[in-house]
Image 1 (cartoon, rainbow, N blue to C red):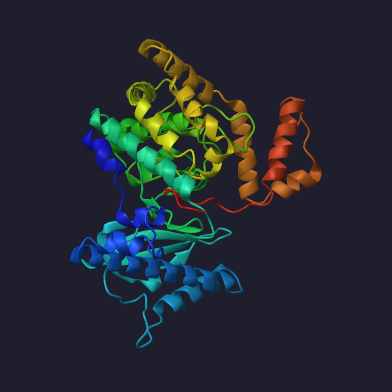
Image 2: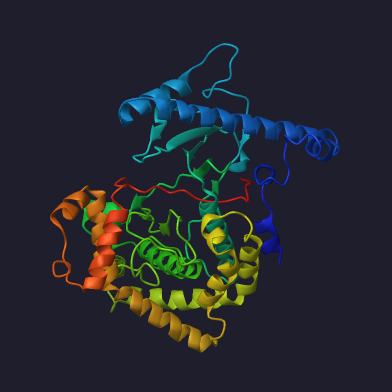
Length: 442
């Protein structure tokens, strides 16, 4: 029970932003916060300073977004604004230490302008390098112009599931990175050094080649460090089961990331509870390339992957009531995909647990899900369409037309593919990680 209580306790900064306490409410906030004495008043000052810091970052991002020119010019503008040091004015290069809103246990006192950059995306999120009072670097992505609450919710649930599995002595090498929606329009996320699976395949040819490059071991499986392969297998299993339970949609190789240590993890949770912009999505994201990295369906590593999936599913089923109760608390939180059908939210998650089955039946059910996902040929076709979109070939395909025969599928599926193409022509940029949540008032 203690592990659950610890997880549900959020930082005071998050509570402020969740609207539970409003510093600007003259009737409530001063009375509630100030009556606690000197220490509480000091805490209020720290919270106010954090809010001012976030406001300055927002104004900074607005100025950069208004800048005309290409991405390089915008990066130069961002670095220039961060490096400004005017006497008597606050600056980003050297300021009084404050707790980092994303991780209040860390105190930061500067941002390194020369290491700051912008990602290739319509909103161009900024990668900021904070410097702690201990002179350590902490990398953060700050995004302005997007609502990260749904992503934050899913990451909080993943973090909870990770703790529950660890409690059962099952470490699936998950990556529940920190993210904080500081409002409905901007937020922070912890930057994790990683590469998308799509980029790995484009540059290295295969996931195994990527691992052999960064963690070679002649005596290991497929010439790869045993620890790295073990981490990859476990993280694949963990995210396959968790994203299945949460109904995470729009899965493609650009929002699956890999670290050099073997961790695979998912980003970008804009579609949950079964919603998906792609037609006929598989039950879980398990592509041919991911399985080949384990050595194929006949390999020892693939069999271990399946066992880890069964074990994780059985353990999480035992905590189904806790997870369902947490989702029930979010019904009125204005989370996009929950708000669509709030009365069906809990039922959608409950159905994924298949609580009507015995443990033995649940294992057989998971076996079938894995087999269906690995054999999802239509999902592979859609993945290729996504690749075309990413490299700018999408409009060319639409211009020349695409028949069912060319796609080697039925007319109905061809129609679905065409619809998918049209719905994605507006966004040819690489997707970026968003994440985490708070029930912010809108």
